[in-house]
Length: 225
Ligand code: PRT
Ligand code: ZN
Image (cartoon, rainbow, N blue to C red):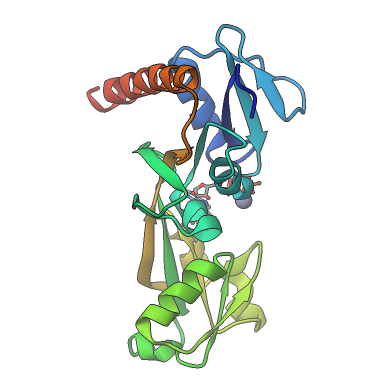
């Protein structure tokens, strides 16, 4: 990690990207983002932006590759097992950001009878969140097999790859279109600002606090509108 620049990781291209950039911009950090690059230096601050896949952000923050990151709580829980602050967690959730709301939920085909959670016994459940799902099944004492799929999880029951799914839901339209009903929420998610647990230098820490104060100011102004 460079000592002289605050490095912030955000999603390169996806649902969270624009809102992350807008938040940083309103916090007074200006970037010229034009080319397909990994790093962008801010025009007016000792800040470097790292544009990456959201899947990689939890590990980058945990490993101290960056000083701050913005990512969905769902990715944080899946990749490094953190969904709330606790002493042993390798990263701190600094703040929930109030966008990117969704939930990770189990969904069951509408045309099949559903008799509560025992219906999942000995089924295959398609998901992009095998770690969260396995943890949940263990806690609930359900023997079922997560089937990891990276995209279009919702078609898995129709094409016979799985019996049910565990996926992110926002409006519920995707489940509706695919004849699935939501039956249980595993995690309520939104974009969160995270930082490594490891300590920074006094100077770095001072600057991080300054940037965080600005971000809090923007968020406060947004919620009081
Ligand atoms: O390329 P990269 O790996 O960075 O992006 P990605 O494709 O993995 O993620 P992306 O951009 O799709 O989502 C980024 C983050 O946005 C997620 O990790 C969540 O924290 C958040 N988010 C909020 C969502 C949704 N809402 C959402 N609805 N992520 C995905 N969805 C998908 C869901 O998987 C399903 O396919 O939208 C569909 C359901 O939406 P509804 O409205 O039909 O219910
Ligand atoms: Zn991703």
